[in-house]
Structures are given as structure tokens and as C-alpha cells.
Image (cartoon, rainbow, N blue to C red):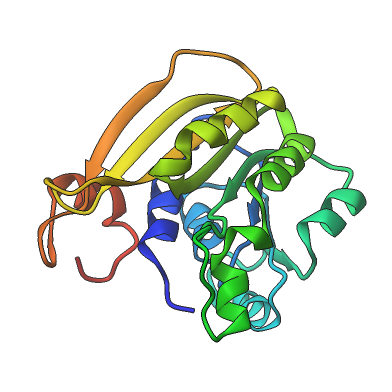
Length: 219
């Protein structure tokens, strides 16, 4: 699977202000978000969780070939299995979950599992994250903007409250497409910002370049 803009945004935007010592990437795919966080911080434990066979193998290979392989580990399991087996909690949890909830499917089952919300419903993701997150930890996700209000409502049920939101547009005049949301168990004022990715095709804004330049060879 190709590296998507969503994963890059999540890996670059997620706050590390609480100096996490342990990180979990739920639905890691090929591991790009976990790798970005390994590049950005010195957390001793960076775990990833991936259920797809091919993506898991790619993730492990990418971890092993990276400079941070001694801090990275990928579990091949479902989120439900993982929650039932893991007793430790994490200082930071990130997720770029499948969220194409429209009523259509492609001809590729693997692509469907990666992309469609029924593979990992938001309520299952949020409940699981609430069990795995340290009491002072942060849970960061990227989701469609149209799902923002319902996601926050579900998070509130599990005592998770938004602390920061970044809404993303592809172009200055386009609709908001994505919401990056950071949650914690503590209610606080919500810092809300907006990011525009491009002014025109392949003409990236200064804000996008400044956010992601440490991770691209060319931008």
C-alpha cells in the first residue's frame, strides 16, 4: 500500500509534548506513522498493530531496516485480541483508521478491509483506545471531517475529550476533508486550527511544508 497523505499528516501533527515513553500505532499498515514518531522522539517502546498479512510483513521489514528498529515492534493481531492480551498502557496512541463508510465495495477484499469503516468501527476503536491509554496519555486520530462531531460524541462516552483539532483542506477553496483530533481523559480548552495542503497541483503551502518537511526527501 502506498504511503498516504493522511498517515503523513498524523505522524507529523501528533503532539509529543507529554514526552511519551510508550507509543501504540493501531492499524499501522506499512508502519509509516510509527516510523515518523520514532524519528521525532526517543520513546523506548513504539508498538504497532496490524491485522493484514501483507501489510504486517511490510511493516516488520520497514521497522527492521530503519535506524530505530530496536524501539519498534509490530503485533500481528486484531485490536480485540490485543486489548484482551495487553495489560500495559501507553502514553500515546495514534490511529489512521479505515473510514470509507459509503455503501460500495471494491473488487479487492484487502483494499476493502484497509479502507472501510466496518473493518474497525469508530466505537470499537475509541473503546479500545480508552482501555489501552494511560490516565495522562493522548489519543490522536485522523478521520473524515464529516465524522468529527460523531467521533467526539463517542469519545466523550468513554471519558475522552478533545484537546486539539486540525481541519485539513486540499486547496484554499475546497471543502474541509479531514479532521485530526487529539484526545485525553482531561477536559480542557480545545485548540482548533486549519491546514491547506496545496495552492494548486503540487504547489504546497508553507504551512504544509513546515509540518512535513522532515519526512520527505523532496517537497
